[in-house]
Amino acid sequence: MLRSLVLMALGLYTPAVSFADASPSRPTVRTSAGLVEGTRGTGVDKFLGIPFAAPPVGDLRWKAPLPPVPWSGVRSATTFSTSCMQITPAESSASALAATPWTYEYLDHQPISEDCLYLNVWSPKASARSRLPVMVWIHGGAFMVGSGAVPIYDGEGLAEKGIVVVTVNYRLGAFGFLAHPELTKESAHSASGNYGLMDQMAALKWVRANISGFGGDPRRVTIAGQSAGAASIGDLIASPTAVGLFRGAIAESGTGVNLFGRFATLDQAEAAGVTFTKALGVESIADLRKIPASQIVAQRGRFGHIIDGWILPAAPGGGNAVSPVPLLTGFVANEAGMALPGGTPEEQRAALAMRYAPLSDDFLSLYRDLNPAQISQQANRDRDLASLAIWSKELPEKPSSRLYVYLFDHVEPGPDAARFGAFHTSEVPYVLRTLDKSPPSVGRQFAAVDREVSNLASAYWVNFIKTGNPNGAGLQNWPAFTQETQEVLHLDEAPDATLALTPEKLAFFQDFFNRGGVLGLF
Image (cartoon, rainbow, N blue to C red):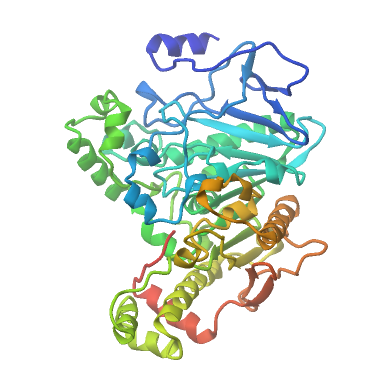
């Protein structure tokens, strides 16, 4: 308790937690910081809002996370914590949200605060004797928004299938990824930025130390995430500071050579940090630490992972995988959307080809038999698959690093289904068995086929989490992706493994990427 009192005296910690006497009707688990009491369901115990690190506030803003502040008594873990600082849906314009496919269940609705380093656990049986496999889910949101409390990330559905599910928060935007020369000088590693990645690793260390009390096996942890969460998976695989924290990885919509275009070097990130600091009217990090968090969020700015020489010594390409673990990865069919440029069909065709200049003529030759809408959709899918195939060339082909690749083709129902198709993130509620998190007002009328796709997808994912291989009884065989076979599982109501790309298309996109072409959502 001494450390807690010191933090309070410094103004770095204000307890925002309720305590209760232990109840036999509620599951109670002892963690390294104290007892937590969750909620007992019919088949799954739920623990929400458990701190895995000290609040990163005051002088701890832009510092590596510290261990959680211990508490006495029993801490209530029955409600989600605040989310990390970000622009909330309420602050976004209605017109901007209407232009996206992401309805209520895809968005974060928790209050925001700098005191946000908490995680959530769903366990089929909160008993240290269970030793169940564990999935740690890292949320997406472009490193700028989101949390472990987003409705489609609810862990109960997968936990019912015999695994422990953990969702985590990590610092976002400027709070999670600001680099600055002063911060680099403060660091014993001469690095700054990537605080959000440090948070993710702190959560994994918490899991390693504590998950056995919730029925999980700390030796059987699979990290998983989508979009920025998937990019984080690539970062963790490539980071020497994350070695030994997991044994498998799932990266949904976030692997491939296009990923490399979104990294800044430390020098570039520091320069951007200086500009950001001056825009807030201050010159030093000491003064920046005194500015209200809401003012920093209001300044906006674009932040993300950095090649800092420590957490990330190099971009996480296949050849930089310091943790060669089994990897399940892939895309949805319409990652880049379905919008077409305006004009006549010929003008649309020309506009699509110009995206691949100076290879426009070669591009049109590859897709000469398709109409503009077909060209747009097929080329986007081919580009994503080629990006992943090229990226995977440097992965070691051995049992400890098997690669399984999917293309999710199923379209989620809803009033805008024809407009958005199988959109970015739409596989998540199928994989995590959270279709029912969509409110009736959204208008997604799920049918039996949607439940079937969810059962299939979640079965593959759970098998992979349990064994490192997605295959199992009653499922269409999902072959490992190798440079010789390059087979991809098309995942819908009738899964089918097919060749990812023709050699001609693969060669075209290899040329495109070699010339510096970067397109898509990663």
